[in-house]
Image 1 (cartoon, rainbow, N blue to C red):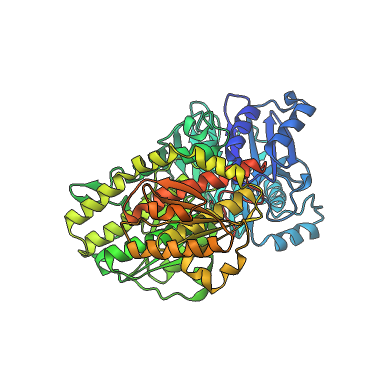
Image 2 (image 1 turned 120 degrees about the vertical axis):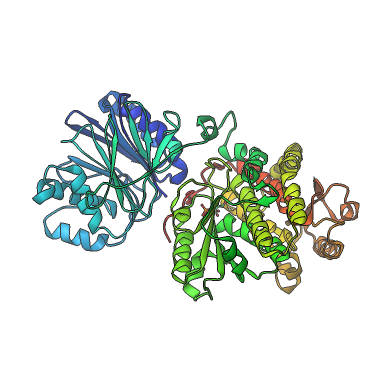
Length: 619
Ligand code: F6R
């Protein structure tokens, strides 16, 4: 939550920072702001609302007022203080010489604020972040940190509690930007005669793919010539350089109206890239495997912890992992996990699934699991993010950058990665013979083509979306792996179209929710294959006829050629036949398309749903 960018180099900082903010807006869009250093002058512009509002303001004041080749910017997801101009970042100290942008929450800000106010400082905003600007200004004018911006920022960081990334400038050090992090993301971009800091490499990918990942409690000073990493005590520290394996085109819309529509189309590649390299010499290979084969053999229970769509990917995987490994699998919302004293020990494997690798709820669940001595394996889409860093092993989903706030390609990639974890466990524990593991992997490898086929037929789903866009609510039903798909379909519709939507296990309907059915209510039913689990199929056919009899408008996602279901389907969306456990990879796609199209028809921004942000770094 909140996107930050900092730059020192040879180009106009305003252009570089605005370009970066455009690609950071997925992290929050409550306000945007920018500070540019020019010689000894610090100029700040900030505005509530989307980046477009800031750009309009810049046009009004004249962009030439912000010339200079060092600067920083911020795009906000509000935590402390309403999303209004004065709470927008950058925040400055009372002398207006120091500017700060912040991502995260300073948990001890109330005490710090009281201390500053007792000192006569008048706060200009309601934010926790502003305290950092005043504290840095004080440190810069006093004591052994006097006149040293890096030392001043380090001293302030030592006093802060909570999660934060800070980027700080001082008008007296015009060619320097200082940034620091604790439990919030920060990467450095290394260019020729220019350096960047940002929440995410997408901010500077058009200028360089060479990056450095900062560790916990590290601080970096960037100048035109280089960068220097220390800890919060000023001692030199090691940071990890890496080369980004995607380029600008991945972070651009590429002719699509919305990122989400592009990302839906990228799902076959996301799946293929996630699977690539994970089956060699007849064995499943995970990435950074710091859990030994013996440890995997000793696992006696699996937890999947995650939030939102990632949680749904865990619910899907439970069916496969239990089936393949005969281990009990519990899937838990990360935000609930550590508060209910789950039974964990060194033979428990906790799989933490997170696209961003930053989600605070999931990170805290990881920390709790490790404190209880459980092994933690992260499934993550973001190289070097905090969750994989704090885990014992990591399996990266190579879905590429996901910029639309609603998860699509990352979700499918998470299912595939979770399945790889299941197969790795089955392989280590010997619950599947090598030829069976090879067969399951080959079936997974066939999925990009199946998803491509679904994508070639979505026009009908779009048309349906437009026709039902005025509905008051939509229900989603499924059984077995179709149940989490129903939950995911409902989540997509809620977050994108602001429509009441709920997913149910179809068998539960008669225990209450069937009372919701009324004339014309659209109900989406995710059918299992008639060949795979015939009993499930026939039960679901009965459930559809029950709701149809009560007036529901049935929208049925079914396998090609499933004629038995046709009489019960007011609308039939066909998907290719695939093995039962892999059906979520095809049946989710029409639900994503449906939600996006309904949202478009209702006039909403599909990429930036209200109140949401892509990385949720608060609990
Ligand atoms: C829904 C969505 C969210 C995320 C959730 C977890 O479309 O995107 O529900 O899935 O916030 O995020 P990560 O995977 O980054 O931990």
